[in-house]
Image (tube, rainbow, N blue to C red; front, side, top):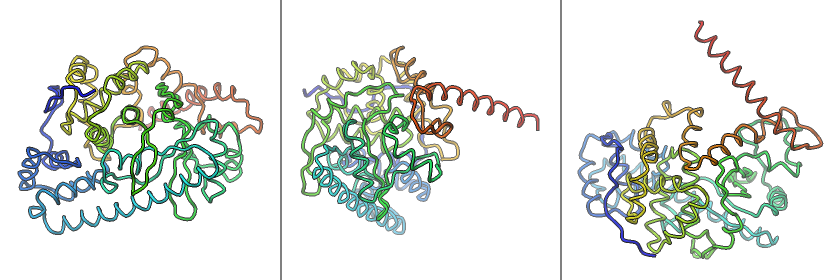
Length: 420
C-alpha cells in the first residue's frame, strides 16, 4: 500500500518559538536533510548559538551523531572549529562503541543458535541498520534481545554461564537475597519491565533479556507469537539477521515512547527514520493492529510527533485521524513543552500516570492500567517478604498495602515540611 502523502506538518496547537539551538537540533536530527531544511540550518548556525548548550541537549536526547552528521555535511565551515572537532570526536567514539556492541550482538546470536534457543534482537544495532541504514547514526549503549517466554529460564542460565551477572535494578539486594531471587523460577513475574538486565563481567556490556516487548501493566498486549511469525531479513555489518517487520517495529517504537512519555528526541527520530526507510509500509495492516490492541492513540501520537517535529510524511487518512483527536493534540503539546526542559525541571515520576491514562482511548484499558499498577507485584514487594516457597498470590495483597503505606508516609512528610 502506497498512500498519497502530504509534505509539511499537521496544523496543531503545538507552540513554536524555541530557542535557536533547539530549532537547529530539530533540523539536524535526521539522516537525510532536504534542501529546505538544509537552508534553514545554514541560517541558524549564523545565529547566536550557545554551542555548549546545543551539545548538551544533543547528548541528553541521544541524537549527537545526527547533529554532527548534518552539520558536517551541510555547513562545516560555519561551525566553530573547536566545536566541530568536539562533535567529530564524540561521533567517532560513538561509532566505535556501536561497532563493538554489534560484534557482541553477533556473538550472542551465535551462542543462542548453538544452544537452539530462538532469539531476536530489536532496537540497538538492528534498528540502526534497518531504519538509519548506518550503524554510526543511532546512539545506543546496550543490547536488547527477545526470547520466547518458555525459553526464559534456559536463556537466563546460558547468559550466567557465559559470565553475565543479572542486575536487579533499581532495588539493591544483599548477596543472599539476590542469590535467592535469581534462583526463583517465577522471578520474571516480578520484573516489571519484562526484561532481565545482564552485565558482562568481562567487558561491562549491558544486555536486556526480554521475554515480552511490553510490560503487562501498560495493558498493550502485543502477541509475541505474531512477532516471531512476521520477520524480515536485514543486512547489518555484512551479515544478514532476522528483524521485526517494519509495521510491528513501528508499533512497538510508539508504544515504548508512550510508556516513557516521549522524554527523548531519539525515540521520535527512530519513528521518523523507520517510516522514511520503508516507503512500502503497510499502513492498513499497521492501523488495524493498533485498533485491535486499543492503541490507535499510542500509534498516532508517535506518528504525529515525527511529523510535527521532523516533517515526516504521513498518509492523508492518518493526518485526518490525528487532527480529529483533541486529546492527542493536547498530549503532543504536553510532550513538546517538556521535551527540551533542562534535567532539573523534568516532570516528576508522579506526573506520568495521568499521561498513561490519557494516551489510551478505551475505558477498559485505563481501568486495567490502574489495577495493574496497584496490584501487580514487583521486586520491592518480594524484598518485603522474600518467602522461600513462592506463593505468588500473596504478593498481589502485599503490593497495595505497601503502596498505601508509602502514600501515607509521603503525606506525613509533606505536612512536616509545611509546618517548618
